Length: 78
Image (cartoon, rainbow, N blue to C red):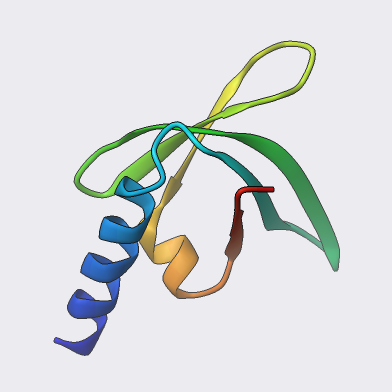
């Protein structure tokens, strides 16, 4: 039940920042950290979509549990 409340608060926090720039730090495996800049585009019940500010304008999705388990770190307004 604690995790559910944690996920709900993470989801609410991300929903409050839709359209804002963020910096995402994620684990790329083998002690490699991947850093991406983008804009939170949309939220869904279990995932959220970030449009990356790269040359190709691609989108990536992350789950709220990724943020809860700290596989992905989000810095708002970056």
